[in-house]
Image (cartoon, rainbow, N blue to C red):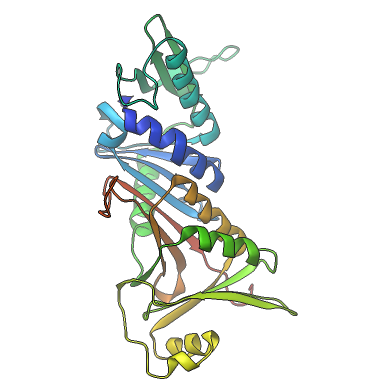
Length: 325
């Protein structure tokens, strides 16, 4: 198998300033999954433990001269430490700046010369070749190589299992509600964390999102109403405005027009770390039969309200069984 490419200006900025810091907070170890058309960072898709996170980029957004080949339909997957990957990326950028290369913050100047490729090397003190993701930084005066250790690339069967898990993770809930004010939601969750470890999340087809934490002594929550709805929607019954949030939610569940699940506050807080990637809005939904809570982050094309289809980011939070909760 072979992989070789050069990072684009936009790809460098996107990874260094936004996605590497966000994804590292979700989990330090993740899978990198490369296909003919996309590069992906995947958390917890194979072990099923914790928050599943999928960050997908069109290859042309991150790379130039993208070359990939393998016997598994040109698909390559391996795991690595995101902190080490970010360190190699920042090291390459600093070398370019010191040697008079293009400042990544500047849109003019010579193109960045950061080439990455998969290779095997025999480390000092070892007799076995070890796989690496190698960064070669070419400045005006010299070239510097920074090798990031990776796992052994996944076998054909493991890649097929990863692809199947990815296909399942990309299935959308039947109802999604948009939360436009991400900072407000993050501040609310920070307050609720001080009350309890379990969070009840209810979503109605009317566009209501209800968050609540209950302990033996305290119940605290908040409700977002009349949010934008994608997918299955319904009109709120007359007289609902006179009911409490809990009563409205209970009646909506009885009508089959809402779902409610309990998730770990720790898991939700991890998913909110994706705000560091600076999405423009987020959608929340509950999978059929309450299988998981899905959070989809949406990015707009610069200067517009049009969706940027070259980037996708979403999380799936496992729900807690009623007996455990």
